[in-house]
View 1 (cartoon, rainbow, N blue to C red):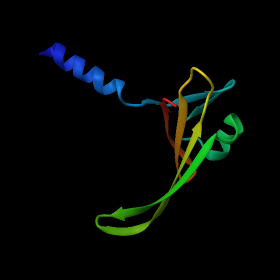
View 2: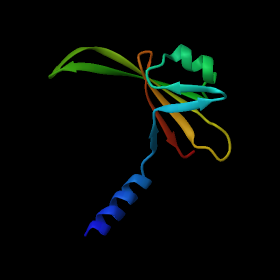
View 3: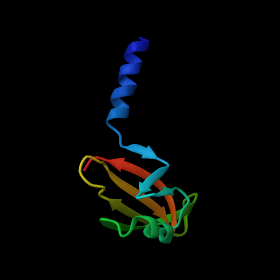
View 4: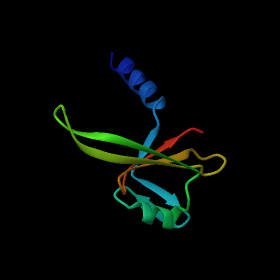
Length: 99
């Protein structure tokens, strides 16, 4: 039973993108919490950029809007692309995905 559970967990983990707290750009390290300006300074312009606007809710009421910026860095052959998500100007997450 434990072996089956371990195999199932492995298969689930293998199918999901890897999450990380850091990204290396040359000799610099990018971490969650950094600003877009800092990431641009360390990594340069992203390969692709998307922008989404989402409602901010308090219960069922919309109380404002927030901006989600999604930047993708293609890091070259043999390396997975890095997808960075910013809320407003703050880096929330770094995810590595297959191209």
